[in-house]
Length: 336
Image 1 (cartoon, helix red, strand yellow):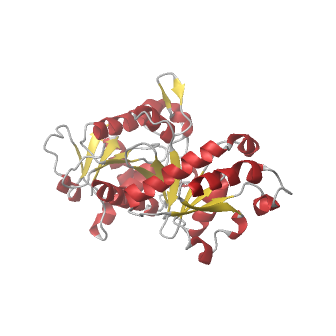
Image 2: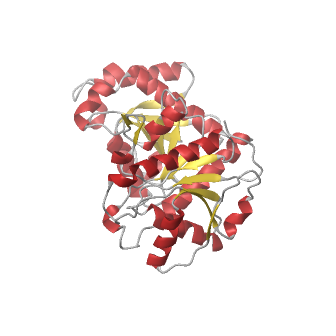
């Protein structure tokens, strides 16, 4: 799926116009003067970028690109190349469904460019999940929409920072649904996708993986729940028999300190907050969300629309810059 374009070109989606996406896109482009920023095509409203820059008192150049046949990524250092998708004027900090179709069109257009090898990867700006309606379906996230587009049966969320990587086995479901949602098969398949992806995209030949327990103290040998004995341990033993370097179930409360995380290339957690709280606490603004299992490179900043600060223009662009950098790194590692 990944093409050998001479220079990496990323597709950056618009995200929610009412959030901070336009702001961090502009700030990321402006930062190219002081740090490397991978060239991207912005799939979204040209007027949105220009208007937001004026509101922030910043000067930017954009250009709507109509012919991508001989597209030169070096133009990125002069202006932001835009695949223009018009929107209805937004109100900062307020979700409005009037731009839902434009938000989805941004994702679909970037995916189409990737399928046709006009770009190497997709980086998605944050959206409101209420926006993701397409073909009579309402998707729970951009990951699920992209999975449909690229015919993926299982997608895995990886959070990557400079000193750790985590995968939540279950994602956006209620805490009450977690015990019934985990299974031996899900743990095995998720862990294998994670291991294979670390080899393919991060050049880690034999990744070392920790798998957490679900219950406090990893169940205390059955005293606090049975999921460890009945589900997690059998999954770990199966993976070990297949010669994967896996340990678990381990107690999550003692797994994320400095000396422990250095032992592992990946930590597979049982649920969303078990994985995301420690990495966000350690890597504020610099963690990146990576979707595995799509057979493409897709990254995104590890934060949401941030409606609460959208009209204050104080958003930190670091996570988006890191998402762009990681997408380029994954492309180059995989192409090799």
